[in-house]
Amino acid sequence: MRAYYYEDSTADQREPHDSGREASLDDLEKVGVLYWRFDGEQGLEELNALAKKRSYKNRDEITVSPSSMGDVYESKVKSFFAEHLHEDEEIRYILDGTGYFDVRDKQDSWIRIAMEKGDMIVLPSGIYHRFTTDAKNYIKAMRLFKDDPVWTPINRPLADDNRYRHDYVSSFDVSVVSK
Image (cartoon, rainbow, N blue to C red; front, side, top):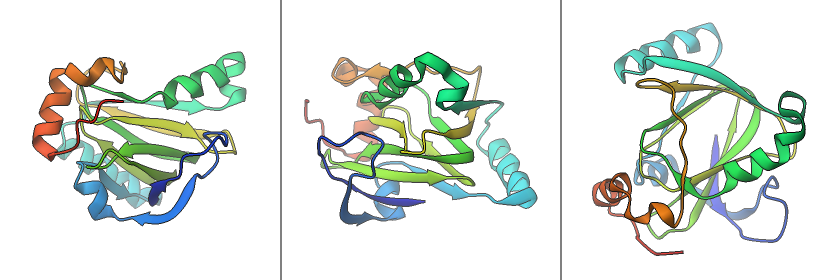
């Protein structure tokens, strides 16, 4: 995992957009983002132990690629990249491939998190974020859930008044800048 501040440009969202300014695990933890690295068979055991500890009861897998999604791939990747939040934690363990999660820091700037096989991330409910594949257009991830699998994005700015957004902002003392 590598994290850095996102440089806005007109380049495709799947390009690195690397500003040259690194972000640390501490920077991510300050906004509630948790990260683990799990490799090989022992990694799977560690992942299962963490899932039990954090009460993740359900899981599924998703492959995001042109071959797995067909004609809807481009529109799906664009919809994943719309800034949004969820009312549940978003938990992703990368099984194969590479991609990016972008999260807002306390000043409402984007931090880009480059993810690859073995990386696991937990985004707290209420955090504004987005996702995209990288230029390789392929990622396979395990999605973990505390209850029944739910993936309902609430896009910004509609989510600004959401209870989970307010709880998140209060908990992590982040910016409430309206876009």
